[in-house]
Image (cartoon, rainbow, N blue to C red; front, side, top):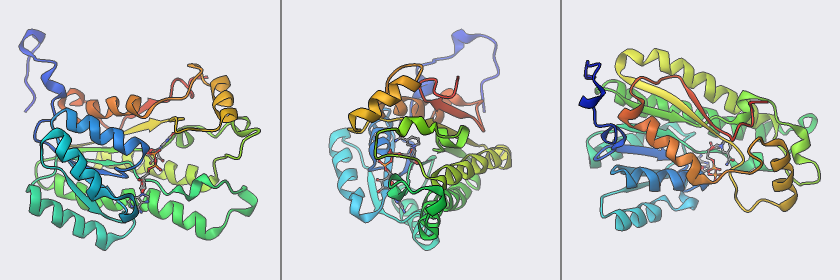
Length: 273
Ligand SMILES: NC(=O)c1ccc[n+]([C@@H]2O[C@H](COP(=O)([O-])OP(=O)(O)OC[C@H]3O[C@@H](n4cnc5c(N)ncnc54)[C@H](O)[C@@H]3O)[C@@H](O)[C@H]2O)c1
């Protein structure tokens, strides 16, 4: 129950950000942003459940986090687009932790990085991207989210993209080998709509569903791309994964107790002009 008061002196604002002993499930946890999410959430006291595909070695990463933070963390190899695999994950987590307080969907299918012109976009690639990005988020919300909804509530944070908010500026990719295929934008548009839907659907069950939209997170990009990016960004630079992670603490903690259905844009003002 939220404290009913008009006196801010009665509130410890630092404590609002505490995640001590919360169990937070993070998908795509071994990725660029996922890794920063895990580290940040561990630093604020949570037990992290590292979820990723086998080849990304989630168990190994969970072990590393356990050792560093001297706390039990868990790692599971899961394909989020497979319902059986996600159901099994929920059972395995609950066997270990007995509870789940938060879910963060930070997975993505990388085939979108290989740019395909819209006219030639391969149907199988479309299916792969939509399956992992959108269906994967749906299944994780349905299976883990439903458990939280039936057991007192929790927090869900999904990751759409600037390209669910605005269209890609095609000039960004001039002179580079990069691009953003339509399947990625479409799948992320679905993630945004699904998140808004669930924020109202589960509001009465004490579930808050919010989003973080990162943009241009630096990962040793080619120089031309970095230069192009700076030209179109109000802040004239790309971002770093740790800059995205701070916003997650806010959305997973009591600090955001009256926020739901929101899309927190960590995009350096990209969509402002
Ligand atoms: N990096 C950016 O600039 C940026 C911008 C906007 C949005 N995003 C979104 O943020 C999220 C994280 O991005 P990132 O840059 O860390 O991506 P990343 O590619 O570095 O990491 C994605 C992770 O998802 C995992 N994954 C792939 N398929 C999976 C499956 N079927 N089941 C479970 N895990 C699977 C991968 O193994 C990988 O570890 C993604 O949803 C992405 O679309 C990123």
